[in-house]
Amino acid sequence: MTVQFFWQVPTAGDGRYADAEKHIRGERADSRPYFLPGVTDPRGQRFNYFDHLHQIAKAVELAKFDGIKVRNDPEGDESWIVAGYLSRATRYLTVLAEFDASRGSAVYAAKNAVSYQRFTEGRFAWQIGVEPDEAKRRQQGDFVAQADLYPRVEEFVTVARNVITTTGYDFNGRFFQVLQGGFQGPLSGQKVPPVYLSGETDEAYALSAKLADVHVLDAQPLDKIASNIAQLRNLARSHHRALQIGLRVDVLVRETEEEAVFDAKRYAEQTGQKTIDNNVAGLWQGLTTASTGASAVLVGSFEQVTERLAAFADAGVEQFILGAVPSLEEAYRIGEYVLPSLRSLINGASQRAA
Image (cartoon, rainbow, N blue to C red; front, side, top):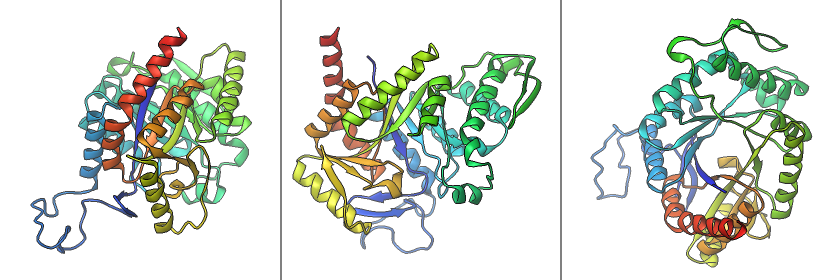
Protein backbone atom coordinates (compact mmCIF):
# COMPACT_ATOMS: atom_id res chain seq x y z
CA MET A 1 0.00 0.00 0.00
CA THR A 2 1.35 3.42 -1.00
CA VAL A 3 0.32 6.10 1.46
CA GLN A 4 0.55 9.74 0.43
CA PHE A 5 1.08 12.80 2.59
CA PHE A 6 -0.18 16.30 1.82
CA TRP A 7 0.43 19.53 3.72
CA GLN A 8 -2.25 22.23 3.88
CA VAL A 9 -1.07 25.78 3.19
CA PRO A 10 -2.84 28.67 4.96
CA THR A 11 -4.39 31.19 2.56
CA ALA A 12 -5.70 33.57 5.26
CA GLY A 13 -2.62 34.12 7.40
CA ASP A 14 -0.23 32.03 9.45
CA GLY A 15 0.77 31.96 13.12
CA ARG A 16 4.24 32.03 14.61
CA TYR A 17 5.89 29.73 17.11
CA ALA A 18 4.27 30.30 20.52
CA ASP A 19 1.96 32.88 18.96
CA ALA A 20 -1.48 31.65 17.82
CA GLU A 21 -2.52 34.98 16.35
CA LYS A 22 -2.84 35.00 12.55
CA HIS A 23 -0.40 37.20 10.68
CA ILE A 24 -0.09 38.00 7.00
CA ARG A 25 3.52 37.08 7.45
CA GLY A 26 6.04 39.12 5.54
CA GLU A 27 3.75 42.01 4.69
CA ARG A 28 4.12 45.40 6.40
CA ALA A 29 1.62 48.19 6.54
CA ASP A 30 4.16 50.77 7.70
CA SER A 31 7.89 51.33 8.05
CA ARG A 32 8.19 50.05 11.61
CA PRO A 33 10.87 47.38 12.18
CA TYR A 34 9.46 43.93 11.50
CA PHE A 35 11.78 42.11 13.88
CA LEU A 36 13.23 42.98 17.25
CA PRO A 37 15.24 46.22 17.58
CA GLY A 38 18.72 45.79 16.19
CA VAL A 39 17.74 43.11 13.66
CA THR A 40 18.04 44.25 10.05
CA ASP A 41 15.72 42.90 7.38
CA PRO A 42 16.98 43.79 3.89
CA ARG A 43 13.75 42.62 2.24
CA GLY A 44 12.02 45.85 3.16
CA GLN A 45 8.48 45.96 1.77
CA ARG A 46 9.32 43.80 -1.23
CA PHE A 47 8.24 40.60 0.54
CA ASN A 48 4.53 39.73 0.63
CA TYR A 49 2.33 36.90 1.82
CA PHE A 50 2.65 35.01 -1.46
CA ASP A 51 6.38 34.84 -0.81
CA HIS A 52 5.58 33.28 2.57
CA LEU A 53 3.35 30.70 0.84
CA HIS A 54 6.20 30.08 -1.60
CA GLN A 55 8.50 29.34 1.36
CA ILE A 56 5.96 26.86 2.77
CA ALA A 57 5.64 25.08 -0.58
CA LYS A 58 9.43 24.77 -0.88
CA ALA A 59 9.61 23.48 2.70
CA VAL A 60 6.95 20.89 1.90
CA GLU A 61 8.83 19.76 -1.19
CA LEU A 62 12.17 19.59 0.64
CA ALA A 63 10.49 17.61 3.44
CA LYS A 64 9.40 15.01 0.85
CA PHE A 65 5.66 15.38 1.17
CA ASP A 66 3.70 14.15 -1.85
CA GLY A 67 1.53 17.22 -2.26
CA ILE A 68 0.08 20.44 -0.94
CA LYS A 69 -3.56 21.28 -0.33
CA VAL A 70 -4.75 24.83 -0.93
CA ARG A 71 -7.75 25.37 1.32
CA ASN A 72 -10.84 27.21 0.11
CA ASP A 73 -11.07 29.78 2.91
CA PRO A 74 -13.68 32.56 2.46
CA GLU A 75 -11.38 34.88 4.43
CA GLY A 76 -8.28 33.92 2.46
CA ASP A 77 -6.75 34.41 -0.96
CA GLU A 78 -8.40 32.63 -3.88
CA SER A 79 -7.42 28.95 -3.87
CA TRP A 80 -7.10 28.62 -7.67
CA ILE A 81 -4.78 31.64 -7.85
CA VAL A 82 -2.64 30.34 -4.98
CA ALA A 83 -2.58 26.87 -6.55
CA GLY A 84 -1.29 28.29 -9.83
CA TYR A 85 1.39 30.30 -8.06
CA LEU A 86 2.57 27.35 -5.98
CA SER A 87 2.49 25.01 -8.98
CA ARG A 88 5.15 27.14 -10.60
CA ALA A 89 7.13 27.25 -7.36
CA THR A 90 7.37 23.46 -7.07
CA ARG A 91 8.57 20.64 -9.31
CA TYR A 92 7.18 17.39 -7.91
CA LEU A 93 4.25 18.10 -5.58
CA THR A 94 0.64 17.32 -6.44
CA VAL A 95 -1.33 20.55 -5.97
CA LEU A 96 -4.78 19.88 -4.52
CA ALA A 97 -6.97 22.97 -4.93
CA GLU A 98 -10.18 23.13 -2.89
CA PHE A 99 -13.17 25.08 -4.20
CA ASP A 100 -16.96 25.06 -4.21
CA ALA A 101 -19.23 23.95 -7.06
CA SER A 102 -20.87 27.38 -6.82
CA ARG A 103 -17.69 28.86 -8.31
CA GLY A 104 -19.22 29.00 -11.78
CA SER A 105 -19.41 27.02 -14.99
CA ALA A 106 -18.23 23.42 -14.83
CA VAL A 107 -16.87 23.84 -18.36
CA TYR A 108 -14.83 26.88 -17.34
CA ALA A 109 -13.48 24.99 -14.29
CA ALA A 110 -12.54 22.07 -16.53
CA LYS A 111 -10.71 24.38 -18.92
CA ASN A 112 -8.77 25.88 -16.02
CA ALA A 113 -7.88 22.37 -14.85
CA VAL A 114 -6.65 21.37 -18.30
CA SER A 115 -4.38 24.41 -18.42
CA TYR A 116 -3.02 23.52 -14.97
CA GLN A 117 -2.35 19.97 -16.14
CA ARG A 118 -0.51 21.23 -19.20
CA PHE A 119 1.90 23.50 -17.33
CA THR A 120 2.38 21.15 -14.33
CA GLU A 121 2.64 17.92 -16.32
CA GLY A 122 -0.42 16.44 -14.62
CA ARG A 123 0.18 17.47 -10.99
CA PHE A 124 -3.21 19.10 -10.41
CA ALA A 125 -6.11 17.71 -8.31
CA TRP A 126 -9.53 19.00 -7.16
CA GLN A 127 -11.25 18.92 -3.78
CA ILE A 128 -14.81 20.07 -4.29
CA GLY A 129 -16.47 21.15 -1.06
CA VAL A 130 -19.90 22.30 0.01
CA GLU A 131 -20.70 25.03 2.54
CA PRO A 132 -23.44 23.63 4.81
CA ASP A 133 -24.14 27.00 6.47
CA GLU A 134 -26.82 28.79 4.46
CA ALA A 135 -25.89 32.26 5.75
CA LYS A 136 -22.25 31.77 4.76
CA ARG A 137 -23.29 30.54 1.30
CA ARG A 138 -25.32 33.68 0.76
CA GLN A 139 -22.38 35.83 1.81
CA GLN A 140 -20.59 34.28 -1.16
CA GLY A 141 -23.53 34.94 -3.47
CA ASP A 142 -24.70 31.33 -3.49
CA PHE A 143 -28.46 30.91 -2.96
CA VAL A 144 -28.82 27.23 -3.86
CA ALA A 145 -31.19 25.24 -1.62
CA GLN A 146 -29.69 22.98 1.04
CA ALA A 147 -31.14 19.88 -0.63
CA ASP A 148 -29.42 20.78 -3.92
CA LEU A 149 -25.84 21.02 -2.63
CA TYR A 150 -24.75 17.48 -3.44
CA PRO A 151 -26.86 17.11 -6.63
CA ARG A 152 -25.06 20.21 -7.92
CA VAL A 153 -21.66 18.71 -7.11
CA GLU A 154 -22.66 15.54 -8.96
CA GLU A 155 -23.58 17.49 -12.08
CA PHE A 156 -20.43 19.64 -11.78
CA VAL A 157 -18.10 16.64 -11.67
CA THR A 158 -19.99 14.79 -14.42
CA VAL A 159 -19.82 17.74 -16.82
CA ALA A 160 -16.22 18.66 -16.01
CA ARG A 161 -14.95 15.11 -16.56
CA ASN A 162 -16.81 14.65 -19.81
CA VAL A 163 -15.79 17.88 -21.50
CA ILE A 164 -12.17 16.92 -20.83
CA THR A 165 -12.51 13.40 -22.25
CA THR A 166 -15.29 13.66 -24.87
CA THR A 167 -16.01 15.72 -27.96
CA GLY A 168 -19.54 16.47 -29.14
CA TYR A 169 -20.69 16.16 -25.51
CA ASP A 170 -24.28 17.06 -24.59
CA PHE A 171 -25.65 17.47 -21.06
CA ASN A 172 -28.93 18.95 -19.90
CA GLY A 173 -29.14 19.02 -16.11
CA ARG A 174 -30.76 21.17 -13.45
CA PHE A 175 -27.64 23.27 -12.81
CA PHE A 176 -25.47 22.89 -15.92
CA GLN A 177 -26.15 22.53 -19.63
CA VAL A 178 -23.72 21.74 -22.46
CA LEU A 179 -24.42 21.38 -26.18
CA GLN A 180 -21.79 19.79 -28.42
CA GLY A 181 -19.05 20.53 -25.88
CA GLY A 182 -15.63 19.00 -25.31
CA PHE A 183 -12.09 20.27 -25.72
CA GLN A 184 -10.07 19.91 -28.89
CA GLY A 185 -6.58 20.79 -30.07
CA PRO A 186 -3.94 21.23 -27.34
CA LEU A 187 -6.61 21.08 -24.62
CA SER A 188 -7.73 17.57 -25.60
CA GLY A 189 -6.30 14.38 -24.18
CA GLN A 190 -5.24 15.90 -20.87
CA LYS A 191 -5.34 14.03 -17.56
CA VAL A 192 -8.62 14.42 -15.67
CA PRO A 193 -7.80 15.82 -12.21
CA PRO A 194 -8.40 13.33 -9.39
CA VAL A 195 -11.57 14.37 -7.56
CA TYR A 196 -11.56 14.58 -3.77
CA LEU A 197 -14.89 14.94 -1.95
CA SER A 198 -15.64 15.17 1.76
CA GLY A 199 -18.50 15.31 4.26
CA GLU A 200 -19.80 13.11 7.05
CA THR A 201 -23.45 12.69 6.00
CA ASP A 202 -25.09 9.72 4.26
CA GLU A 203 -25.64 11.94 1.22
CA ALA A 204 -21.95 12.87 1.09
CA TYR A 205 -20.93 9.21 1.41
CA ALA A 206 -23.33 8.15 -1.36
CA LEU A 207 -21.95 10.76 -3.76
CA SER A 208 -18.33 9.85 -3.02
CA ALA A 209 -19.07 6.18 -3.58
CA LYS A 210 -20.52 7.07 -6.97
CA LEU A 211 -18.08 9.74 -8.22
CA ALA A 212 -15.02 10.49 -6.06
CA ASP A 213 -11.49 9.20 -6.42
CA VAL A 214 -10.78 10.05 -2.77
CA HIS A 215 -13.15 10.74 0.15
CA VAL A 216 -11.56 12.90 2.85
CA LEU A 217 -12.75 12.15 6.39
CA ASP A 218 -12.53 14.55 9.30
CA ALA A 219 -10.31 13.44 12.18
CA GLN A 220 -12.13 11.25 14.70
CA PRO A 221 -11.15 8.42 17.05
CA LEU A 222 -9.64 5.39 15.33
CA ASP A 223 -12.61 3.06 15.82
CA LYS A 224 -14.99 5.61 14.31
CA ILE A 225 -12.69 6.17 11.32
CA ALA A 226 -12.45 2.41 10.75
CA SER A 227 -16.25 2.12 10.80
CA ASN A 228 -16.65 5.00 8.35
CA ILE A 229 -14.08 3.51 5.98
CA ALA A 230 -15.95 0.21 5.94
CA GLN A 231 -19.22 2.01 5.17
CA LEU A 232 -17.68 4.04 2.34
CA ARG A 233 -16.01 1.06 0.73
CA ASN A 234 -19.20 -1.02 0.89
CA LEU A 235 -21.05 1.79 -0.86
CA ALA A 236 -18.33 2.10 -3.51
CA ARG A 237 -18.41 -1.65 -4.18
CA SER A 238 -22.14 -1.38 -4.91
CA HIS A 239 -21.11 0.89 -7.83
CA HIS A 240 -18.27 -1.49 -8.81
CA ARG A 241 -15.75 1.20 -7.93
CA ALA A 242 -12.65 1.50 -5.75
CA LEU A 243 -12.51 4.53 -3.44
CA GLN A 244 -9.42 5.81 -1.67
CA ILE A 245 -9.74 7.26 1.82
CA GLY A 246 -8.10 10.48 3.02
CA LEU A 247 -7.88 11.92 6.52
CA ARG A 248 -7.69 15.62 7.33
CA VAL A 249 -5.96 16.16 10.66
CA ASP A 250 -3.66 18.76 12.18
CA VAL A 251 -0.58 17.73 14.14
CA LEU A 252 1.30 19.24 17.07
CA VAL A 253 4.45 17.24 17.76
CA ARG A 254 7.37 17.92 20.06
CA GLU A 255 10.31 15.98 21.42
CA THR A 256 8.31 14.94 24.48
CA GLU A 257 4.60 14.55 25.22
CA GLU A 258 4.87 17.06 28.05
CA GLU A 259 6.23 19.72 25.72
CA ALA A 260 3.51 19.03 23.15
CA VAL A 261 0.72 19.23 25.74
CA PHE A 262 2.21 22.46 27.12
CA ASP A 263 2.19 24.04 23.65
CA ALA A 264 -1.34 22.77 22.95
CA LYS A 265 -2.64 24.31 26.18
CA ARG A 266 -0.85 27.57 25.40
CA TYR A 267 -2.48 27.64 21.95
CA ALA A 268 -5.88 27.04 23.57
CA GLU A 269 -5.33 29.87 26.05
CA GLN A 270 -4.14 32.28 23.36
CA THR A 271 -7.24 31.56 21.26
CA GLY A 272 -9.67 31.90 24.17
CA GLN A 273 -10.60 28.22 24.43
CA LYS A 274 -11.44 27.32 28.00
CA THR A 275 -12.19 23.61 27.58
CA ILE A 276 -10.68 21.19 25.07
CA ASP A 277 -11.76 17.57 24.66
CA ASN A 278 -8.48 15.64 24.61
CA ASN A 279 -9.62 12.37 26.09
CA VAL A 280 -9.13 10.09 23.08
CA ALA A 281 -5.57 9.02 22.29
CA GLY A 282 -4.04 12.46 21.94
CA LEU A 283 -6.79 13.76 19.64
CA TRP A 284 -7.68 17.31 20.69
CA GLN A 285 -11.04 18.13 19.13
CA GLY A 286 -11.55 21.67 17.89
CA LEU A 287 -8.16 23.08 18.95
CA THR A 288 -7.28 24.67 15.58
CA THR A 289 -10.63 24.43 13.75
CA ALA A 290 -11.12 28.21 13.65
CA SER A 291 -7.72 28.69 12.04
CA THR A 292 -7.21 25.70 9.73
CA GLY A 293 -10.62 24.02 9.44
CA ALA A 294 -9.30 20.72 10.85
CA SER A 295 -11.75 19.10 13.26
CA ALA A 296 -8.97 17.85 15.56
CA VAL A 297 -5.24 17.91 16.30
CA LEU A 298 -3.03 14.94 17.11
CA VAL A 299 -0.89 16.09 20.06
CA GLY A 300 2.11 14.15 21.32
CA SER A 301 5.76 13.25 21.04
CA PHE A 302 7.33 12.38 17.70
CA GLU A 303 6.95 8.67 18.47
CA GLN A 304 3.36 8.94 19.72
CA VAL A 305 2.06 10.87 16.73
CA THR A 306 3.95 8.61 14.32
CA GLU A 307 2.36 5.51 15.86
CA ARG A 308 -1.14 7.04 15.86
CA LEU A 309 -0.92 8.07 12.21
CA ALA A 310 0.37 4.59 11.36
CA ALA A 311 -2.65 3.12 13.13
CA PHE A 312 -4.96 5.21 10.91
CA ALA A 313 -3.07 3.93 7.86
CA ASP A 314 -3.49 0.37 9.13
CA ALA A 315 -7.24 1.05 9.38
CA GLY A 316 -7.34 1.97 5.68
CA VAL A 317 -6.38 5.64 5.36
CA GLU A 318 -4.32 6.05 2.18
CA GLN A 319 -3.90 9.81 2.02
CA PHE A 320 -3.17 12.13 4.94
CA ILE A 321 -3.83 15.86 4.63
CA LEU A 322 -1.84 17.28 7.53
CA GLY A 323 -1.51 20.83 8.74
CA ALA A 324 -0.31 22.87 11.70
CA VAL A 325 0.18 26.36 13.10
CA PRO A 326 2.63 27.83 12.19
CA SER A 327 2.62 26.13 8.82
CA LEU A 328 6.14 26.94 7.63
CA GLU A 329 8.11 25.84 10.65
CA GLU A 330 5.96 22.79 11.39
CA ALA A 331 6.26 21.50 7.81
CA TYR A 332 10.01 21.23 8.34
CA ARG A 333 9.51 19.62 11.77
CA ILE A 334 7.08 16.97 10.51
CA GLY A 335 9.26 16.30 7.50
CA GLU A 336 12.32 15.72 9.65
CA TYR A 337 10.94 13.96 12.72
CA VAL A 338 7.71 12.20 11.67
CA LEU A 339 7.50 11.38 7.96
CA PRO A 340 10.64 9.19 7.66
CA SER A 341 9.75 6.97 10.63
CA LEU A 342 6.07 6.96 9.69
CA ARG A 343 6.78 5.79 6.15
CA SER A 344 9.12 3.12 7.50
CA LEU A 345 6.47 1.92 9.95
CA ILE A 346 3.74 1.80 7.29
CA ASN A 347 5.94 0.08 4.72
CA GLY A 348 7.05 -2.49 7.28
CA ALA A 349 3.44 -3.28 8.18
CA SER A 350 2.55 -3.66 4.49
CA GLN A 351 5.42 -6.05 3.86
CA ARG A 352 4.46 -8.16 6.88
CA ALA A 353 0.83 -8.28 5.70
CA ALA A 354 1.97 -9.42 2.22
